[in-house]
Length: 223
Image (cartoon, rainbow, N blue to C red; front, side):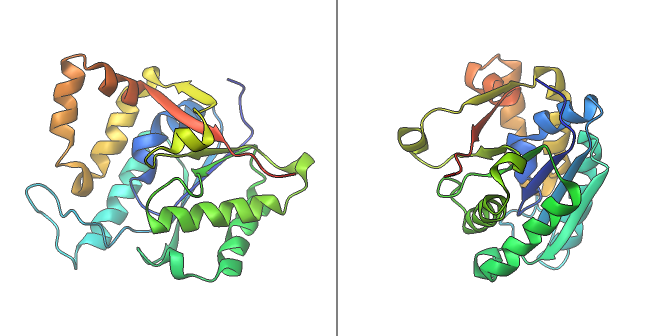
């Protein structure tokens, strides 16, 4: 894979990056590529409080902020931006405001690659609102100046509608960084990581594929 000039990652929640793209981010950082991660919220409405619980509704925002910083460090991200929105409210933000936010990031950073969710196929309302804002902002760019958008899709039956992923990235060399990013978000991941560790130790094929292969759809802009 070619060396990118600058990668811009946009997700609404801490830990959105850990499961699907942390290996890819770690790979780009290992190549010396700058990565900017714009995380819109602190995920303060996350349903999990640790297992066993170690957070409260009052303490969770600060805990998740620290977890996000730790995950960024695990991936080698030096430009982490916490955009200050409230969890579970992105879908209610003004469309023009969200588009302008992404446009400003694109103008400042001029990325050669953008990573976010695929609109219509990313389940959570905040995911969908973020994806729509990214696509709207990128659609405003001239075709010749528009970087590719590597989009994550995981809704039920998405491949029946948009086909299989067209970008498969082998991140096996960065499996430990990916694990570290997931462990960084312990308030949200403690309930599932022991089971995943067992599957990895047992050589479970699906678990290994999930850990070592990251899947993206190159978003098909209309022009």
